[in-house]
Length: 220
Image (tube, rainbow, N blue to C red):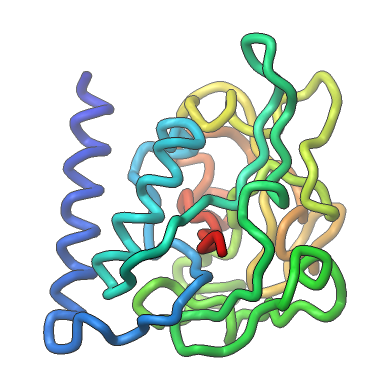
């Protein structure tokens, strides 16, 4: 109960700050269709499952002035209760996607997972148009939760790569990408599949260069 209450409080504060920042121009970025969350819900990789993650995308987007869009978190999920695995790439629509400044990120899902994607530290902005801290900044928050392979798929295997389908803030691990395209891991320059996190708690995510942030896409 305490952790849930804390998460709700953090979410309310976060959305309130975003709304305040855009109060003078609530329609500042009406065509935004991609962003990195300016914060996570505050409970590590426990995002309330895929549904909770999608809802948080919607809250942040609407606070930044986006209207009339359906938002989805770029997150994979393991098979559960008889359902098949969910691939991050299959959740986000067909594109194209633009950041909160109107800059094109990718025209299609295939482009997004190719060298054509404009996914750099300068282009991968949060919902308010801010650059997200990367390697060399303090604090470094370049680890972005995805649970995905380089191709945007769920990684089949015995290891937990989604922090119990985004419901754990303790045991497990999650695959993360580097939004600034640098750092360590098996694929250090990958935006969506650089390495596994140390754990699922907020402290473990922060210790390895993250903060529970993830990508949000508007479904077309």
